[in-house]
Image 1: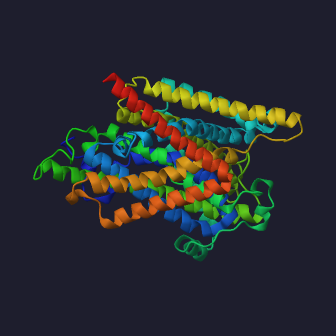
Image 2: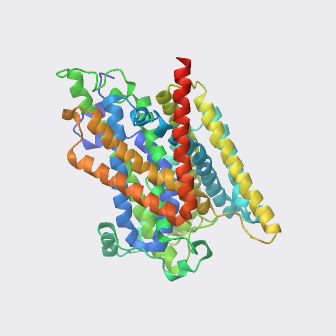
Image 3: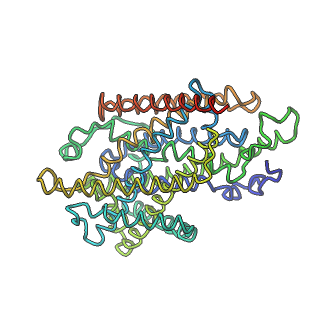
Length: 500
């Protein structure tokens, strides 16, 4: 543990605490691209201000989730993946389950972000019709190649700084536009404080994309994306280890230090760092969500326009264009950099996840970063190529005239990574607090109760959405994946015994 507390940590000036904003900024940047630019706008256009209360509630529970992980890392230096090794038999089954589902899901997420960013370029260049309506996927392939090249060269730092600046300018312009549009502030406040029933308006229910798509599935897609996914949060724990906050270096931990040791008090002070970091991150996400929900309700819904298909980013230009036409290029530039950064960050999350899994399973993976990047990048390329081929041959046979929708591509993976995974992590945080954290350092009862409520909520709505999305097929797939995780853990256990 670093004996020297950062100046921002010991300062009583709240402004100085901004210096603690670090890993949380990474998490915020991962969600602002897809979550706020796309799905907040889409949700606002469909459900209006009624959605704001649900978003606020979801972000509260996700904040509880992330801070619960941070508490573990700061106090004990033990990542949830490592804790889960002791969670039932066969040992390591839950960690291996997350490994298997991550292997399947990450390429889909990468393909989604690449295709979405490609859709913006296809719209700007008028090439959406390429490859029988899958030009956005072709652009996505090019962008994914650039991202993988940048990751190999390590040349993204300057681009990231530029992206943050442009995103701030874009948010400022959208806020100005929102105020000039004179929204119904009473309706916004009512929607934020009092969640109301959600139903499709008639013009949405008549759209081919929404035929047979239950409201639950649509809303749970937002729940999984707004604020980030379970894997993003598990990567947050790995980032704290890299920052060296508290006991995350696993030398002096709350479990090993004797009572009365001054370093125990130091660990308690360290808890302020992730508290500030997480809070600033989710406040930023909430602000973005509120603005884009309101703009979607005011500008897209009256026109019966909806971010969907391959056109997920272009319509939002009206948020700034209707008031300041000269800001439209700034919007497109900012949206591109934001989504490009989200794509880059998604690929970068995978090595952090694999590194912590290897640590928990006692695997020697010196090339973990290379393996994770190649799998996510290569898998994303395969998904994009398969989507182009499906559009090409489907169109030639007359069965379809467009590439498969990006949202439909994302939904199955998102139901686990963004929803059910959050429930599992929330409940495991409670288990860790009650079993491993000393009583005098344990979280307050309210925090534990919120973690329990959030865990059960995420699990139930995830299961409900699975059923509505694919019924028994989806349940069989989920059950089979769990059995594979248990089988992998059993095999690992036997191989470990054989070696010993």
